[in-house]
Length: 140
Picture (cartoon, rainbow, N blue to C red):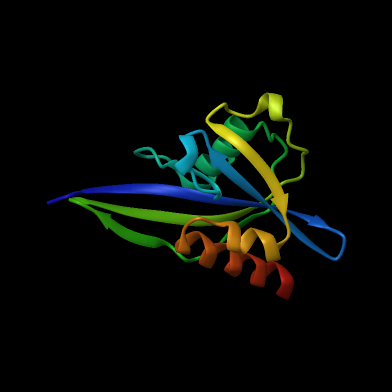
């Protein structure tokens, strides 16, 4: 039997004008790194909400808690004998990002509206999740 790995993907957003901007991050993994959301493995016994807020604080230096939105679209995929479950959440970014406080794991970041953020996402699961977040925010 394979190993089951739980990951969290956090799609940060902020209101701007009449719409929203979304944070795209690119990890420092060479030229093949894809733009996407903040992501991390979920540790054994960690609660989702606490882990999300901790990763936003530790990886991005964002301390002020914002609105957290469960996108209710977990992704499940298999890699060899490992099964990966990704829990997708939206997170309102109230603080301004300070690049000096960001984890050096992230090589680059940028804020984009949905027309640029959606096609920039490197994985289909991420495109589906950001579109769901945008639909939820636009309907509210």
